[in-house]
Length: 348
Image (cartoon, rainbow, N blue to C red; front, side, top):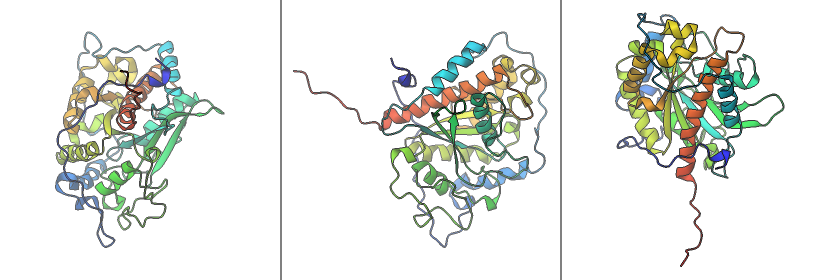
C-alpha cells in the first residue's frame, strides 16, 4: 500500500439525526451567536468564566498513576521521525485536493492557536509562534487564518492546513454565529475574513466564495477543549457542542477533539509528558471531555502545547505529531466519502 493511502479507513461513522440548519441571516439581523436556536446561545457565556484569570480554575488533587498505559504509545526518537515522515508525505486520496483543511474550533483560551504554533515548531526544529497567541481573556484570533504546515525551510508544505478562527464564547463582539461556522466549513468564507457582529457572512461579503470547490471546504473539524477547565465550563456548553456537532455531521464532515493543557491537570505529566497515558486524572478528564462533546473518547487525544519553553522536547513532539496523525485519519475519511468511485468495466 502506498504511503499516501496510510490514512484510508474501511468505514465511516455518523452522529445521530442532524437538525435543520438555520437560514442565512438577513442584512438587518443582529447576528450575535445568541440568536441561534436553543443552547447555541450559551456560546456567549463561556467568557464569563474565562475573564477571571487565564489559569486553571480548579485544583486537581494528586492521584496514583495507573499500572500501565491506557493507550499504547512509543516515545522514541525513531517514533518521532516515523510520524514526521508519514505526515510530511501525506496527500489526500482525492486528486482534486492537495491538502486537507482542518478547522480548529473551541472556547476562548482553549489552545487552538498554540496548537498551530506547536505543530509548526516541531517541523521547524525549534519553538516558534507562527500563529499569534494572546494572553488576554478574549479571543486573540479575530479572522479566518489558514496555516500551511511546512517542513524544513525551503521544502514544500505538508498536506495539512490548520484553520484558526475566533474562539467560541468571547462575548457578543466576536460576531461568530452558527451560520458563520457552517459557512466556513462549506468553503464560502474568504481567507482573512474578520468576523463582526455587524457583518455576518453572506453572499454580499467581500470575497465570498459562491461556488466553493472541494479544496475550499473544511475536511475535518477538531474541537479543542482545555483540560484544566473541563469542570468549570458552563453546563449549557455541552448542549452547544452537541448541537454544533449535529449540524457539522449533516455536512458530512468528521470530527475529533484535542484535550489541551494536560500538564496543568497532572503534576507527573508536567514533569514527564510520557506519563500522560499512565495518568488516572487525565483519563478521567478525557471521559469528561467526551461527555461535554457528546463524543466517544476514541476520537479524543491529549495534547501538550509549547508555551513557555524555548527548546523542543522529543516526547512532547511525539504527542503533538500523534494528534496530527489522528486528525489526518479522519480528514481522509472525508475524502473517501467524497471521491467518485471509478470502477472498471464489468467482467463477464
